[in-house]
Amino acid sequence: MLSQQQQREAELVGVDESTAALLRNRNALQDQRAALDAASAAAQALASTNASISQQINSVRESMMTQEQLRAKKLADASDESTKALLRQLFAEEDKADAIKKQQEAEAQAAQAAQQAAQAAQQAAQAAQQLVNAWQSVGDSIMNEIARIRGLVNGGSAQSLASMQADFAIAAAAAKAGDIDAAKRLSGLSQSILSAAEKQSSSLAELNVLRSQIAMSLTDVASVSAAKYGLKVPGFAGGGDFGGGIRLVGENGPELEATGASRIFNANQTAKMLSGGGSETAAELRMLREEISQFRGDSRAQNLQLILNSDVVAKVLRRVETPDGLLITDTLPELKPNLM
Image (tube, rainbow, N blue to C red):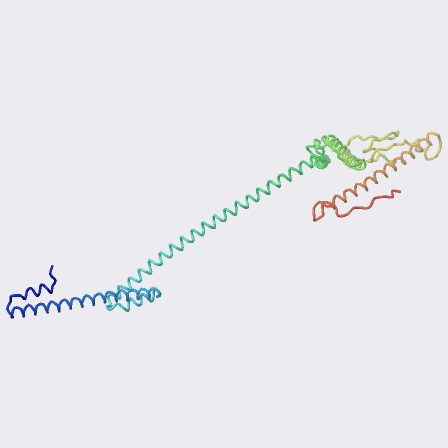
């Protein structure tokens, strides 16, 4: 295949000079046109390259601008007022859409935060409930142990001695107020209390104190009932042994007296004792002296036991009240009471 130059040289062979001149002129114009086309293409390529670089430069600059700066640049670049008006309308719509988007995002974040807070509160409540359940279990075991220990202390009875005493006090108060059913219950309650006390009392003195309290309460009820309803009470004009309670006494007419167990001497016996006559009187006086001596001995023993029991109670109280737990911080010296 011939090149362009070879084709042009072949065209000039065998033609006259005027035709050759025309062909040469055409070829020159074609070369000029090709040069112009090449120059135009080069210029266009250069312009395209420069435009691309300028666009990259503008992109970098715009990336560093705020939204207000970008909008100001676009308005400045617009040459027509109608274009600027359209740009302003576009900016307003963009602001509106951006506000709606931000509101939606804020609502979504608030909902997520509320959900997280609810989950945290639920977890905290569950943890608190687990702690309560754990302590409840421990507390139940402690209360069960207390109940077990109390059952052992009370001899395993269903009702404690203190509870029975409370029932007795209530029944006694009701009986004095006129409740006959409560009065009927007093004997049974008294027997139950003393039966339980015989098993639980730490000493005979403690038991005797309780017996005296019960007897005095019953005597009080009997005295009130006798005065209110005119009940018959024992009289000892002829002397004899008295088991305790209420009785008729008095030198100026009948008087009501409530005491414990005693020996009653009639008027004749009393007169002989006061005059000092008769062996029978002497025997009675010796017997009375012996009873008084025995009573004093029993009283000393009971007082000693009460003192010792008080010592034990004091130690127990100190043991319970220590802030460091169940530890005895000190002990009492050995008690040597003088009961004379």
